[in-house]
Amino acid sequence: MARIALFPGSFDPFTNGHLDVVRRGTQLFDEVIIALGNNSSKTRYLPVEQMLEMIAEVFRDEPRVRVQAYKGLTADFAREVGARYLLRGLRNTTDFEYENTIAQANRHVNPELETVFLITSPALAAISSTIIREIHRFGGNVDDFVPFTLPAVS
Image (cartoon, rainbow, N blue to C red; front, side):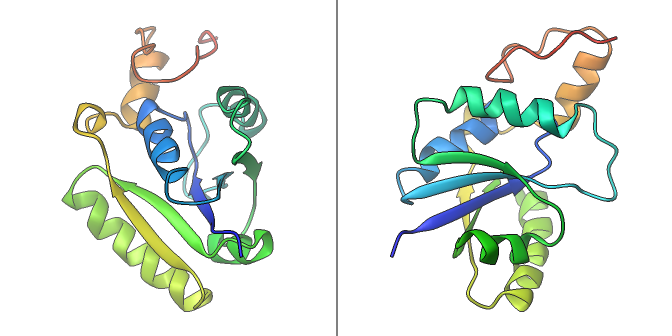
């Protein structure tokens, strides 16, 4: 049975920290599905379709990585695609507290689902999509933080 991991998030935008987690995840799992979810408590900065295309281009030569959008509960989507693992990156203890709560809820919804945490590489720990959005929104250069060029701010 293939070991399929789901790497869910809003990825708004997908960062070099996310890239690092996916690359390291491919060393642990047979397939990693980057799953762009719709967080009902967030307003998107970049359209899901655009981010899907940009991420897919980054992984175009990696057959064990695919990119999909989904709606609804992450634990249900994992079941749909046959993923038995959730892959999550942790930058700090604050991330752990938040992710631990989500992992417990996901396990309640889907008891077959195991969450695997990877500690973020130290050089990438300060990167967050929120900070990147702010820098980009005000015309700053974010090239060092993302694996592609973000579209110009309109």
